[in-house]
Image 1 (cartoon, helix red, strand yellow):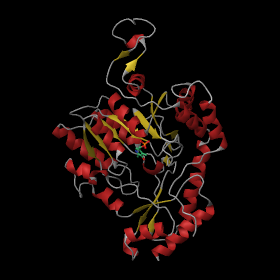
Image 2 (cartoon, helix red, strand yellow):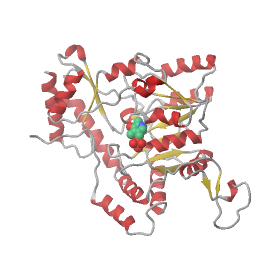
Image 3 (cartoon, helix red, strand yellow):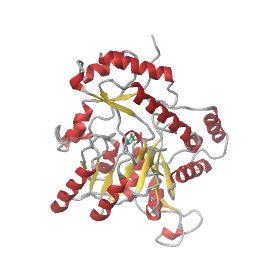
Image 4 (cartoon, protein in one colour):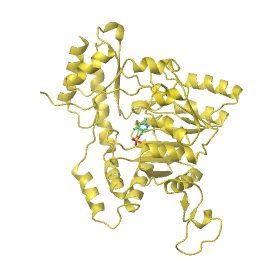
Length: 388
Ligand SMILES: *Cc1c(COP(=O)(O)O)cnc(C)c1O
């Protein structure tokens, strides 16, 4: 039986292992120097002023929304074609959530739909406070078109860049926040770099940064500048708001800092493999991932859409046949508004037809740093056989 090929996996080098072991032997296993090193590495890579490491991208989205002042009575919009966390962060804050249907070519939220929806929301007095563009598969949304809308309608832009560390938009790194207030990354093992579990918020705004740092650790400050009275002594701290414990450990941060040194190598391998898929899949009845000319994807995912009128099998049959043959395909994503929890909030099938159409056709093929060319050939050969 041929080896199972997963859709994604981490790559841990001896250098990564040594970096973690060094922390384990040191005085600080949390909140020590590795956190600062990792934050600095990400901020510098992205040309962002500030970075705050946390326990996951979910935690990052949560405190980013809190820092943006999102609360009860407010509204957050995101893409329906994302992991549930991009929407759940709004609900954690007590806000309402709504979705902006996707562009049928890039699969990111559609700017045209966003414009129309904002126009309607303004007339109805239901404008969003936060909009979360998700850079699906590592391809940036059209941020330059979102920024003027944010200014006109007064919402905060929070990029869910969980897929997109190492990607560029208009020649700048994703995470530079050139067109947004905040961006978050995920370091889950299937993502571009990993810390086991982990996430980060980047921003250029000092006010947001100060709040993010507090929110990461219970809403507590040790900085006298922010206190309501003079410190009682060197032990003194104040809790100014209700925060959380979302601190990353130094063990994880050491792995992250080491992985950052390999980021360009990771992304260039992914780009090479994506190009290779583009060539190998020519002539098959599938739509290849379209790339906007302003973007250079980090290629977290390689998604094909089945041209169903040219294929005898159903989407599900193709999917199961691939998995049966040891090809770990996956589906990103089940439209969030169709999840039972969101249906209970009032959403239903049919609400966001482009995201639903995509869901009935999409398949994520295996793509990761360690994928060999012969394994990739096997993926394509199997797909060709299955599609008949
Ligand atoms: C992975 C992912 C998240 C959540 O990341 P965690 O680090 O697992 O919390 C959020 N949004 C998107 C788009 C993701 O892919």
